Image 1 (cartoon, rainbow, N blue to C red):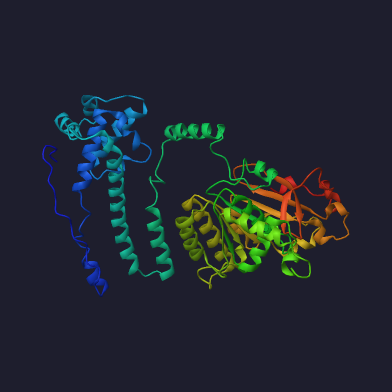
Image 2: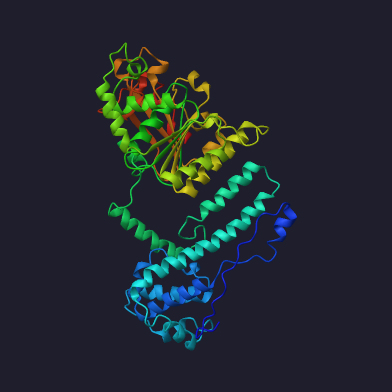
Length: 485
């Protein structure tokens, strides 16, 4: 390519996509019209020229523009050289030094020509040119995605699977940088030390649940890209802990709550009880209990600032959950997703064994957490056989169809309220709940003591010493908990 004179091409026409048959449609893509390159290349040349004149001009694009965003590969290599010098703190870079570094890829004469492209152009245009280069890169990605989606339209897979694949393609366009590439050990550790420094300074912390002892066990709170499973027998408070944590997090982050079991009105009753402190019975029968409408009004206003989004659509499979989560992420943002509960989700193929369906669900949830950079809390039921044991705190093997759940989850915890199985326990068990973290891929395992207010369906931190579990279960010496895990 000659950098002395730059040709201006006619703007291409869009491909007519009104073909009536697959063969006609795909034939139109045999020689596809590529998105225009002239504006991209001229913007790239001018931006690189700014860099040669003053590296400080690249400050406005350094945090998002990458070498792979340049349409001309050589331009990307030159940009990489400029950014290396910029990150070292240099004020300018010599053309000869770049020519030596890129020896064999570019001549000194070509680099000199590039360095003169911005003569007479204001440095103030660097930011807008950087955005233009980036947007043109996204346009090329969009063009490539449109071809992939066109292929999917006539694929042989079930339509739901093809729609999900198409949504994944479009969702990937929103990322500002490539992910999933090989990273060498040294570079990875250099970047990780920067992450450690941010953690030390308090700039990066976990998403706090509002339950301090649980946050400590999770090394600061819920972690993005993780799948957390909370299991319990019916009536132990799965939904309550999901909503307690979800509503606490929604004060700061965006939370999605899939209620596959309860309709909106029941979810909102619980939300009102948790936030206002009004017993659920008062909300169900307000006239009988002389409901405090001032408390209701205050809580309604308080909810204005909560980013708590609820879907009560029943029977969603993993493809439908994924589509709705992506849509919520686009429209309102999404940091934590609560799913109530796994047992109510069907597989995409009802003919397959239930264990296979659950494995499909948990693998899909883990992949979704990584794709959207969120934490997913999935609630799950455990086998009823737990009720036949002396110690009724569930373990990993008690999860229904547990193979997939146990394997894919980063954290697995179980709720047990001893008073439910043994109503004759002392009064200090009335509000006591045990949350046992049985698996924690990145941290410690152990027990978290919680306070449960049944009339509010709300969990909170336990104050003081917990009641003696010897009254609720077999003595510790009769059963080695450590040996199980």
